[in-house]
Length: 469
Image (cartoon, rainbow, N blue to C red; front, side, top):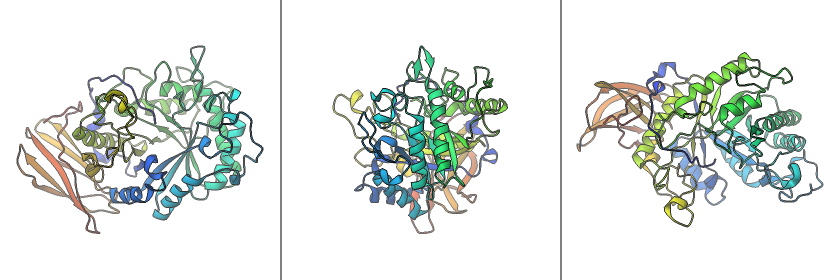
């Protein structure tokens, strides 16, 4: 969950955009992550109501070890039983998971650093070489406390980022992958020791999308954690990792979902095939199970008012839907995600510094809705090919097959009904129509409870993910 300071580049060819829904993973789950709102006791009730109206069925919750441990800033370890859940302050996390359980929502619990200082090498900070044995004991406590209600875990958030795990490099060579490998193995061992491991799935990765001089590129990180060389040959001294999936944060740049990063070890939403290929090669080397699924557990499109990294408000709604369609068209992708309900609180200073957090919310920091707020329950992606367009959409709050109305407007004209589509059992639908310059589309759907959803006007995009209208 760290801002990507990336160059703005032109969008490139994206064949996945036009892949037919018939080839998609029909059971794709969409996670929502809103820590600012859900971890705040005062904001939580209103946020939960909003998420229900938006059609949320699953949450991602990042549990930071430092936030619940005793003496997190002490340099000397306190005396306590680290495997005993009673030794920790689970407070704010308990409330969120209880709310999810009451609503029948699935939860992905990502357990991560920063960690207590006393659990690191040298106790100089909260991220440097966390002690695997201490982490194993902590994960035993996590499993004992949450293992009855949570069955999907991932270990560490963006371990290829120095704000969560250090050092990333040592003597100019990647160091974080091997550190992470030890933590992952310890974490799984801790969950097994909890007595609640039956039925659990554990994901590895949660990697940030691009490498820099300070960040290990995700595919470099993957190979290092799995003891693979650049040709995906596994070291004989390393055993396979018992993973149930690979989690990744496929953020893109201001160029949109069609952006193709030049670094061959980077993975943004437009080049998911790189990750699929890497996982297949790792499986062929015996490092992970064959067919390991992909979980896109953190994603968002940053918008105005960020003057540097944000796209327009209209583009944010369009890019989110296009990205979700890309994920849906890939059979290996099990989860897609939305990061933030509300933007991060602005900082003081000039605009370039003021918006230094994430502006990927469906609402501005103050709570006013962006167009993406009305688009998210009824996302629509429109792709042009010659004189025709293909439409892909979803009635997200639907709990079964339903009918959606697709409306169209030309130029400055009013919207009128174009067609009605019956969705599949999960609310997904597709259609085709004609293209005309300046034409816009939107979706109208009314839930069985009588709640009316009307999406914003959506433009057609070509296969390069550039506006075609």
